Length: 258
Ligand code: DO4
Ligand code: MG
Image 1 (tube, helix red, strand yellow):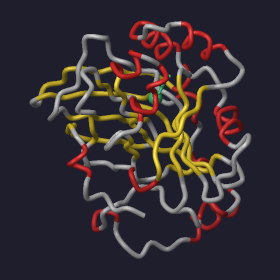
Image 2 (image 1 turned 180 degrees about the vertical axis):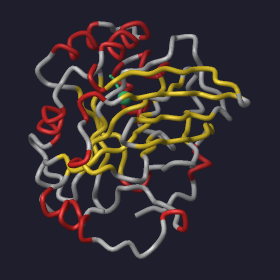
Image 3 (image 1 turned 60 degrees about the horizontal axis):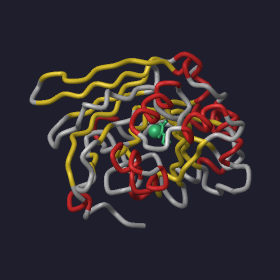
């Protein structure tokens, strides 16, 4: 993957057009679309719903109101490539967290030249109770075993207009839907290129990067994920991600390290 992101978008488009598939999709297991020194980053509080939900859960409300309106967006490191899980694999909740939610997000695949070359579905799993206690706990609320899921297939940027894509989140428990909501990328407060510009502002990403663009769907405060729940995130024209929920790091012990 990172070798592809070493190229300009017009070269990638040509390489994709010329590529001759040597295997049928159904016959292979798709891996995470990140490798090498690629990192996954995420933006936060880019939708009004995310701002309001965090104001509600937090003891320190104003940081979220301030960052929603600020010139500089909130960006945080989410995952190295090797920790990412894909469609069908479990996502995690922290064993020391009571209030956990999925965050369904459009993610951008960015080449080393800061060009958006494709789109993915991301689930930015989060502990609301850990973050709500103190925003300085954000790295623990956001980075733990099984916290970052990405869809495997990249939708090329030249095939999709990302300005008004429906994003849908469904949580199923014992076969019944217990939470369901839809938003649109139209609701995002910042241009996508503003987010990528900040990601590359004072850092190089020589293997490219994935940047998730924030959530516009946050369940109500009384919603708790349970072990065994099935989370489905789908984004029109981009893809779908389905992951069962597990708790604790042991389920991820056998992820392949770099
Ligand atoms: O401010 C904390 C994280 C926000 C976030 O992940 C989001 O809005 O999607
Ligand atoms: Mg998020």
